[in-house]
Image (cartoon, rainbow, N blue to C red; front, side, top):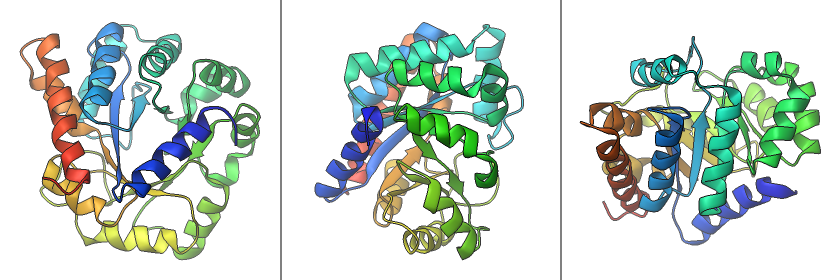
Length: 271
């Protein structure tokens, strides 16, 4: 492994060595502005996030619920471009030294050019990409360029994934496996449920790669629940909602910092 994929792996291993799950925050680039988004990500790290996923805003985010769709709409109306996503990765990684990934649908990368995207992401210090809608069997071109530039390729598995399919996905994914805790779109849930634990166990049976759980975690108690069986806890909508509900951008940044602190206690079993 080379570059920041190693930093990603080391970060997950360090959390495991501490006997806890890693806290992974998701925030979209360009929300509420490019500069505001950068400040929010720094605040997530400052509050206790180990890793951050930077969302590349998309006009049709099929896996995202209404909260993230709202933030994406604000970012797109503000004119966010892939260059702004790269700047967000560069500045947040440079400021913190922590692993920063991009989460994106395939279409924007395909239009931008795989070689150009991977080269720029690596140059910006990115650790890799989460690609929720790229089928493994169609990922050859992406994987070739990601490997060339030392980037992780994180695929998403779901409760509906059969064991043979899980093995197919985990054989080629790198960095970590993103386990979607339930069927449906992103958003906060009253309960994360037993489906997630079953999926983690089935996924772990196919790989030594860390398995991190997202979709539905919104508070410290849920983070603690998921941390008992997963290598990482991924939180997105709750951070975005805190920013949307804030009276101004500065308060939104503080809401992110505060929630990250609460969730960091949760993954350490201190909630």
